[in-house]
Image: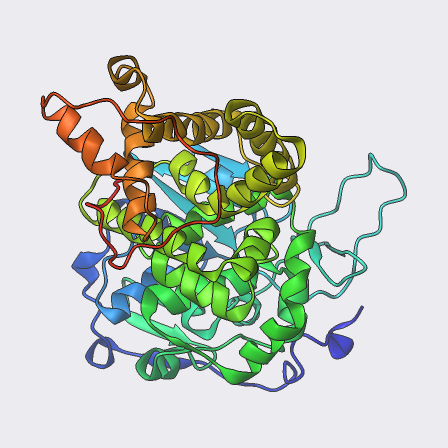
Length: 450
């Protein structure tokens, strides 16, 4: 394709210019930039290249937040960057970037992206893409984007206007090639270019919209909302391994409950967790368990405590597992352990079509499901308490009670047992799973997902 026909930027031939915000027009203090990032920036400048801090770090500094990462963008190619920095390596095939080690930090350095003047079409499976090539799937998804350009073109290749801001530490000025600063002030999340085309290029951008809207408390602009409604099913095309990583960014970054609410509202949860979404339509009250799990995880992250994907996925998939477990027992009259094993296997297998769950997480997730059912039965308490997954399973019992389920006092029983009290054995074994009985209050002491 040629530049004039590129549908992504219908106004790209216009000289939109660059608004420069000097020291008196922004609140970024040069001393707030880590020395490692400044060193990378200056090394590139001294080698004769352009370089700027870019993206989320500039956005967060302008909002008064402390950035998690500092990224640099430059007109040096990945190979030129690698030649400048001895401790560096090129990563990625779809989007080549360079990781530069500076002290104990790793600074991500990207080359300015440009407009797609040509699409690479290999003659054989072994042919490698040339520098400056792009490749698309039939759906419009961008499979490879190593088209290099200048800083203005790079700004127009960014996803959202608030992420398309550049900061020059030595000049202490912010460069805005779109409406980034104005949108920051208005707290609007605006897609750069045509939202439908940009989401077709990379459907994960819809998830990023949900994440940023929740994290920053921004409003997604109307045309982007309409595009999400049109394109959300494209998420099914994302490789399962990549989607697993995206779920962790969405739900284990400290704003999981808010992000889930935005995803659910926009229809972005169902393409990633289809069987859970079906279970929630059948039993809307099951949503309480997911919300409480995410709130607990958010609290732990805020307190600097560890969280694990195993517990997160145990909660996210529990409504689907409980639904399948109930149907298995009704149909096959299987005992609970056998039904649990079969139901868990089926749920995990189906979920892995959408998001890979590495075995290091799927195994403890299944152990949490199995052991927490045994905790509800309360047989052989000393043996159960010695199990390596006891704490996580106990937390899962508390989580279910916290979300409104009546588990016949299992949470309090185990809490008192751990405090050293002599507890009576239950009168009867745990009943088969059935449609939940709701309690009148929220109850529970709060699972921590340990």
